Image (cartoon, rainbow, N blue to C red; front, top):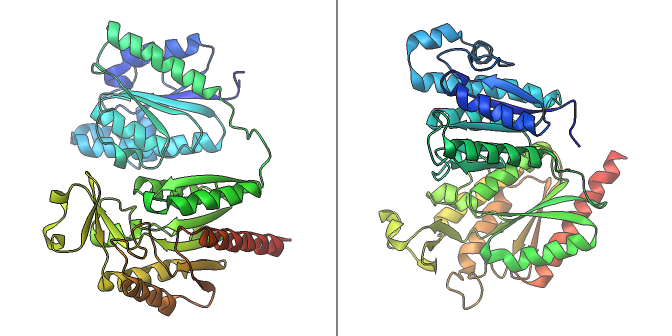
Length: 413
C-alpha cells in the first residue's frame, strides 16, 4: 500500500535534462506514487516542471550562491558543491520521514551528484540510478550503500524509444522496491555482524550456526575491502547488536598496499559505538594482490602463493606483524566497553596450519606478542590452543561473544 506521507525522491540536473526527468515523473505518478524533486543542475531552473527544491537552495546548503558557481564556470567545483548541498537536503528529508525511495539519472556529473546525495539514505530505502556509467567502477562513489545501478544504454539527453523504455522500467522498479516491507519476518534475539574470507569460511560457518541456534540473525561480510567498509558503516548506523570480527585481513592490505584494503577506519566502528565485540587476527598472515605480475616490485622476492589465477597472496613477515599487532591493539583500546581478543595458536587461516604453505608459528607469535604488549587492561586476551577453522575455536568465539552481550545487557538494567 502506498504511504501518503512519503514520496519517491527524484533528483538530477533538471536544467539540461528536464525533458527526461519530466517523463520519469509522469511514469512514477502513473503508478500512484507521489514524487518530491530536487534540481542539482547549475545552469538554470527547471523549465519542464516545477521542482520542489531548486538549484539555488541546493547551492546554499553547500555554503555558496548559485550565481557564483555559474560565474566561476568551474564544472568540477560545481559538481562537488551541488553534490554536498543535495546530500544535506536529502539527509534532512530522511530524518523527517518524507521519502521512501530515491531515483536519479545522468552521465558523469549527474551520477556523481546523485550518488553523493544517496550516501545519506540508510540501508533498506531503495536507491536507483539510471546512468551511462553503470558498467564503470563506481566503488568510491557508491561507498557502502545499497544503490542499484541501471545502464541507460543511450545518453540521458532527450527522449527516444530506448530512453523512454528504460525510464519506464526504472520507474516500475523503484515503485515496486518502495512497496517492499522492511519488517522482520520472525522474532530474533539480536543482529550479529561477522567478517569472513575463503580462508576462514569453516570458522564463520560454524559460528553462524551456533549463533542462529541462540536466535540471532547473522550478517556475514566478505573481508574484501568493500565488505569491511560496509560492515563498519552499518555498525555506525546502529544496525548490529554485536560484532564477531573473525577476519581482519584488510588491516594487512592497508599496511602493505594490497588490493583489499578497507581503509584506515577498519576496526574502529565497534569501538566507537561501544557494542560488544570479539576480535580475531584472522588472515593477518596474508596480503592480497591480483595476478602475479601485479605484485609490486618490492614484494616479488617474498613468499607468494596463487590462491586463484587472479589472486596472489603474500605471507606477512615479522616486521609487518609487529606493526599489525600494535595497530590492532591501539584500535581496540579506544573501545568504551570491554573487548575480547582471541588468538588461535595453531594458525590464522586455512593455509596457515601444520604443513600449510603459510604455516609460520614463529611469525604469528610476533603478532600475538605485539598485540599483548600494546593492549590496555580493559581488553581481554585469550590464547586458544586450536586452529582458527577448528570447531573448538568457533565454540570459544561464540561463547565469549554471548558472554559480552549478556554482561552489557546486565549493565543496562
